[in-house]
Image (cartoon, rainbow, N blue to C red; front, side, top):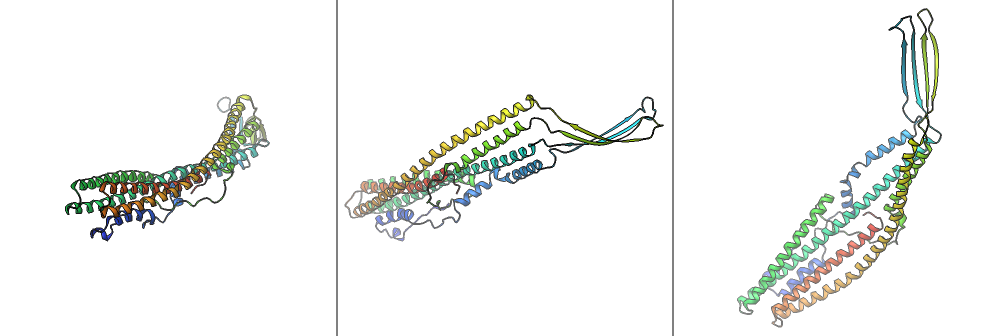
Length: 416
């Protein structure tokens, strides 16, 4: 981050300090930074999202859901099994008894079981997408907070730097006049103390800026903070039901409902059909006989098997529906609060700008009067401080107006 430091040529020529202090701070307030970043907040957000574990694992999650969907659409609910048997009396009598049996066991879908399995996979994939959208929105809030904190810190550092340059120019002018005998030595001490105070304020502002930039860099991986703000919203308030928080809760509840339907419908394990063949003889004098085997295995159901699954799915459904209702009420309140906050910030901005303009005009008048001997140094320094405070207030008002716009978009469920 490069700070803007303006050093007018007339400063070296010891021209009137009124023009010096006014120009320094006004140059920051009303001129665009020459090193404005090319990327916007959307690029910053996407960079931060690319660093998140959820984003990096998204493709693997999609592959997992695709595999589950393929399994739910398969011809069989599970893999077939093969069994081989061999029977002989060689260890005992050894009369030639031999029997070889081979069988393939095929699990079968219960009525409606396949459809219920497909519904669960589809609902859980929708729930995952909802949670992913909610995670993106949550990260957007963190990025917006870090972004505006960094911008505010950078702006305050620039104001503090401009204020230091201004009082340093005043100190140089006072020192010259003290040396010429036009002002008392105590005025030189006062000007020097004011410069030292401005240096301390600049050091504190730089510390806050470095801390904010470090937090922004750790979250996004981007070194420079872009200067572009978010585009103001033109449309009205969106439906709270379409908010990612509400949508995620609704999809989670729907996934729980499909699991409850599956637990209630699948009352037993899948039946099993066995197909096989056998070749046998009772003793060595008998010919080999060929037989075909057909077996059907039907497991029984029971409360011990189904009740825990049904109870768990019922609890998840109740929690999901409650979370959906709570999220809808909370989002509605957050939207109203963010709208009022934006309106307040918009109304405060022209007041702060008017105050800064008045302070700038007053500071210029007193500076000229001080040069002409109409005002003393304490009055001149007080005007300088008031101008600096008004400039800081204007910067904060501008930052707060942009931050309020971002918070409104966040409350509406919109990412950058």
